[in-house]
Image 1 (spheres, rainbow, N blue to C red):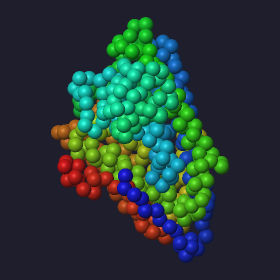
Image 2: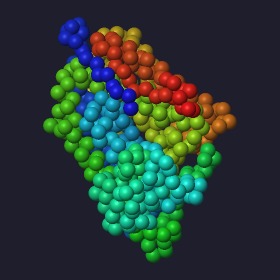
Image 3: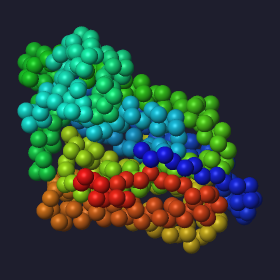
Image 4: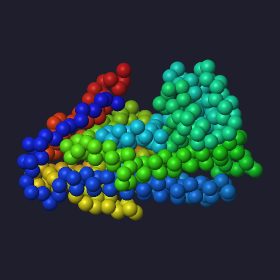
Length: 418
């Protein structure tokens, strides 16, 4: 991650604003309310996921496994809309890796196909398989995993050995357990784990009792982590207090930092363009479930939520917004930004429709799939284009330049292949 340069809003710029239908203070209140609502819905759907997983564990069959998978996909929709609160909010960024870190070396967790390999120079825990091994001695480190608990996952396995790809917690660890590896490359098909992998009485692939324990522990931990972030955005919570401490100047800078960094370096670059350049399904965000199209789509919706001060989930919120401030200062720019955000949403909707029509995201990025590649490139282009308009918003509101997150795939493409 490149260091971010936070913008400051000078008193002159503040007083230069005309009488507004919305004030910066009101915009910051709405922003925090949207965050609280989004994380609250993420928590609610995570509780639904836990109930579906409990049903799978109680009666492991194709129906309960399908229901648990559907609950996981449903839980992703509100969570992904919260990602626009990263990059400017340290409280969120310091926490986010617990729940949404990726990519992961799944051999840390469970059995994998032989093509995965047995070792990695970068990660001594690459194929540790904690589900099959109650005790591990790796790189001079001993881990007692006799009992698989949330504390074991969070404190000893997450980023074990200092490797960021040792992702033991969060949505993607649960995703891997529910689907298993996607061994189809850029051909059709997602992971195809059998429900009997969770049935100690009719166990497939061994260690079903420990796999159940891991799934339960990871889901419990996800809920605990989401509860922490809901509390952080509640009145008096750490995230709200941190936002307030920045004043109106720093608060507006935080909003635009999150919008621009997610739009450009993180989403357009690291999550989309990189995988498209490499035609590599290992670079897709929800790689086990083939749900990547939805994850990208809801990230884009989340950027819009922040800009327009509106969230349409179960905990619906609307109020004063950055869009209101821009409209008061420069109506033409306000129309430009809206048009750019609408164009990005349309490109994402085309991607989503194609995936739901039968061609998954990993197929779209496949080498030689010119039409699919073009659909994904259109999303990248729209995200990059809208970022340029977000930069103009920074200028119009009197902010100093903000250095949004970058990506080699956009800024230095040759470096990707070095």
